[in-house]
Image 1 (cartoon, helix red, strand yellow):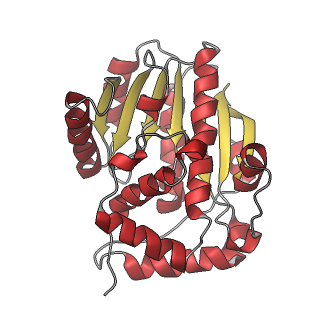
Image 2: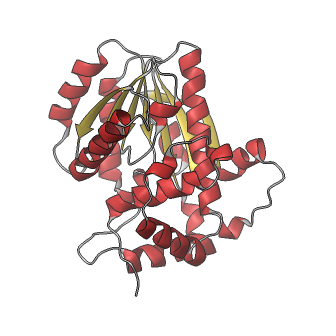
Length: 276
């Protein structure tokens, strides 16, 4: 019998992916999230979609972890604002003096907040400066969220991370997000974004991903996806692109001996943008 899953539950699977190779992902706390059910779903996903997915997610975590840490160490940022944070563990992997705002759907963020509190109390996690905020990116969320972020952010220079979100929303919601980012940030602050490009639609792994996702989501979940070309980021009025990598370029940096079949890789693109 197939195990169905809700969209928000994919965050458990992503954490499970990161836990498969801690030396690569540098996420020594990802193992806290997965359950036995998650591991069963992860195996089915890897068998049905792409054997490279755990590796690719470890690479993504490593890329953004180092990008954010380098900017912090260079005193260019003080705060990480993670939109659609899922069960990422950046606050516990980055320097303890960094501040964090974690944002996600109400049920996801409340669950994460509760688990983090429990694990900090039991000393499984070190204490960090984290503010948890709720937001549904398909609702009229901007005014209330902007007010809350502003009260926490103050004059801190920020890095906004948008990881694992754009695939699940449409272009209007994307436009709203980047407009909000521009309102939140001042000159020389940063955005990190992850997305697929349209060419991936022809790859075997992507076709398998769509089929698997449509089959495995619970019946009342709505699923559609978005791809984003380079020109979208290059044409943003308020941001300039300062780095662009993908799964293959990052793999070549960290594990150059690895052989990947392009047709079997869900090649995500990673962007770092700087506010003008």
